[in-house]
Structures are given as structure tokens and as C-alpha cells.
Image (cartoon, rainbow, N blue to C red):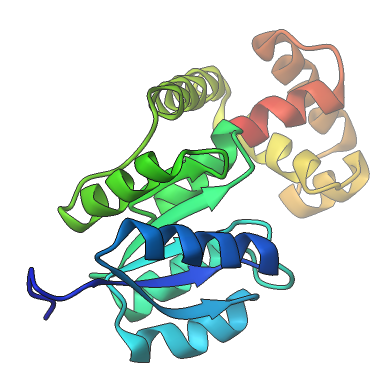
Length: 213
């Protein structure tokens, strides 16, 4: 267990050597940190980080092969107590939400200042969730969108939802009819009702709303 007199052990997962090197130098200048491992891909990080037992992992999302989000999910399964802070260029709400759902302790953009990064690492160590005010706002907005989409789906009947789910998977009307054991015209009726209830006019619009829930 780390004591106050020991440096914070950091592992970096970043495929750009220049960025990883800059992070290491930044933490070295800040003092109180020790970079115990640096990895250019998620597969190697997943194989080695559990044995290193770092205090905090700084994780990129856009990695070659396994994504950073997949790596987080696997690392948290292996070491549930591990604190992982995403450090990425992606500011979209979906990446943010999926990272937190996978088990990330926080989410920062790579343009974050060194001072803010150091603060975020300490916050994660204390069990907090370091997010900028903008990122926190995106979390709220994303949840609101998910709730709105789920509410729209609630107006569909069970069969209409089943039909829409198969449409989203790329099945054609006849294939849907065969899978559900109903007539082609019944499928068409379900689709018409779905369009009307969701206030859309095409298969694409209906599927997009379905995928947002």
C-alpha cells in the first residue's frame, strides 16, 4: 500500500511516443510521481499493469487494436480498485459516457494543463471523479438524451419493438416475417405504426432513434 512518503505510481497507456514522453516529463517536474510503466497498446498494458499495481493509470482512447475503453473494462475486471483517468482528444459525450460506464475514474482532454492534470490524479486517488465542468455537463446531457429515447420507445408495442430491433440489425421485411412467424403485411403494419409513433418517415430515422436508447 502506498504511504504519503512514497511517490504516486503512474502507468501511461498512450500510442504516441511524443505524448507519453511529455506526460512522463510533466509528472517528473511536478514531483511526487513515479512512472512505473508506459504502453503503446492496450493488449500489452492489460498483460502487465495488474502485476505492476500502479496507483493511477492515464489512458488514451484511440489505441491501435484494443481501444482504451475496452482496456479500461478489462483492467477494472482484473483490478477493481484501480483508478483510471482517461486522457484523450475526444470530447464527444458518447466516448465520455462509455468510458465512465467501463469503469474510468475520470475523463480529461489532452489539452488539459499540467496543473489540472496533477489535481485530477490526486482527486482520483481520493475516490473522486475528475471532470471539467464542460465534461460534467455532457454527462448530464447524454443521460437526458438516453432517457428521452427510452421514453419514445415506450410508446411502441412489444411486437413493434421486436420488428424495429430486427430492422436495426439489417433484416428485410420477409426475413422479419419469417423470424417472428407473421405475415409480410403484418410487418409492414408494425413498421407504419412505428414511424407514426416515433414521428419519423424512414427506416434510417427509426433505427437511429432505436440505437440511441
